[in-house]
Length: 76
Image (cartoon, rainbow, N blue to C red; front, side):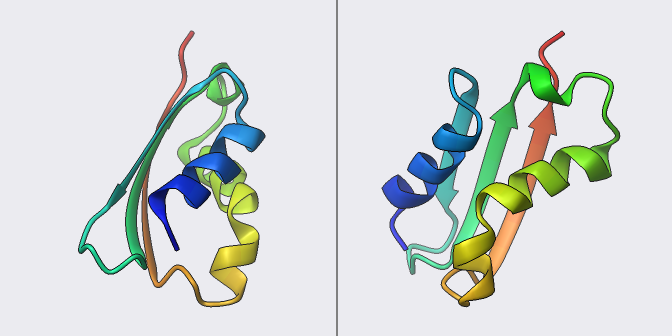
């Protein structure tokens, strides 16, 4: 999976928010994603990560993404 595709999925789920995706190994299946969104304000870390997992559910389910490291923060 290309960084661009993963970025597009996250940007669609978090329009106007700061999204960054890094391919950690160069193999296209281990990623670090960082999302800063006002939607996270007041949510627990688990709830924030659930929103990110939901955004990339399809590539996680089909095994395209082998590892996903997530960093989230609110903007408020």
